[in-house]
Image (cartoon, rainbow, N blue to C red; front, side):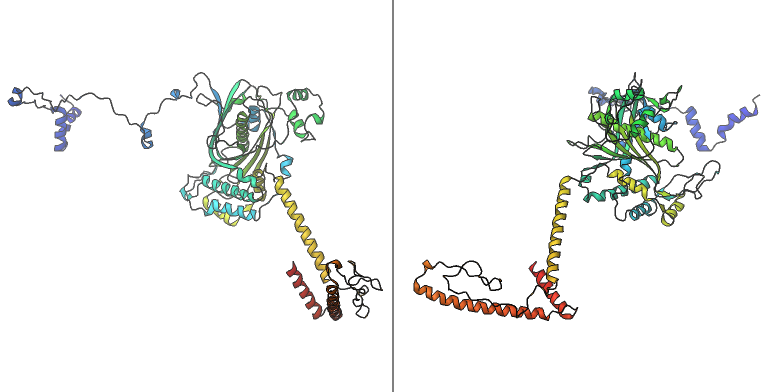
Length: 605
């Protein structure tokens, strides 16, 4: 006897609606009766080829393939395997260092990988130039750039959720505001534009180029391991001339071995740029971190897919123009400032600075022998935090630690403004966008030293041409002499006449008449009884005239001399009266006379 469940299963199909019962019956018992092909007798008699529409025999063709794949449907195309990539090396792997790599030992581990000696301060030659150049109203402009980037930009996007540290367990609502990557991009680009405004004083700045999102990579061998560094630089600045080294390399590998053995070397054999041997002695005393039994490459992943050689990133964009890397900018987009430690970020800056310098050295010296050190600058930016790095590549021999080493100068923890609201525990205000905008508009604590260092980095390697200095000196000297001459002439005009040296009108002698006519006249003035010179007589050749003409000429000369003598005497008397009217006391007359003399002098000039 069937059970209750079995009866329910048999009667289940009859409990459904009628249309669903017909659907079940069709699925279980329905059959498709295919109709037979009926050919009329007329066509059968003509022996025509009849094609069954239900079973057509179409010609076989190759499937159609689209000539190009649209990016919209690229995700539908199956991707090839990683091993099928043409750059995949099956039998050779490298240790990869990129933006995702974090060195847990920090800068010491990066120095082992790059054979570098660190100095945790900027060079003295750099510090001397920090406050030499300033821009008018630069502090007010930088503060306005900060407010523009954080509060006044019109871009509004939905930001990811923000969380406090795990001990507090507090979450916040979603916010619509300016994304962090745009905030840092606006601030950095505005500050670089402000640095470029000094191009009127330094014309060499207009020869530089600014590139964005330029990928670079390089490969080198450290001991027995092959390391590959690659990164996409957000911003780089190139210069027609390379940066000068901070410490000139005047010591060879044999000298370094002698230093390592403890032998003393004279200072003139080492370097003339660094007379105190500060950096050389520190480099000799520096001991690399001993990570035994752990390899320094423990944090680097092994990679088979890589490109051999090197790539600068801008050679394909500019043709027939030699350029050298000046400064690269690393903008970090970490959502929380405590995602990585400061030492890990500095280690990344050391590795990327070394990679940029090594790629440039491989491009300039294909044989692997450096004739001059390669120097690059790097700036790290995360919100208000800045790190400054100067790297000097002295050698491309990374097989041992006894030969020449590289140098890196690090200036860390430079805050553009203090007490920024953040999600860290020590900050009293949470880093919500509302608190951040209120802080920059009302309670901004600006630090001017950071932008001054940024400006000095930007102007590093820039000098004034000699022709401009020469033109400026000549113009300054000409202006000085003109001003001196005008001042001396004005003093002589406005000075009062001396009573002791000037004769009165009664003491002056009138002009004397020349005796003897033209035959006794000479080219020199005839002396007076008191020794003062008389009027000048121009000599005339008497052979050119007849006796009648000579007599007539003598009468005319006598008349002209009398007229001239009377006119000069009259002018002298008027001049004497004018000087007698001038009173040394400050009255209106002397002011009027000085004003008239000034107008005459300006008109003559």
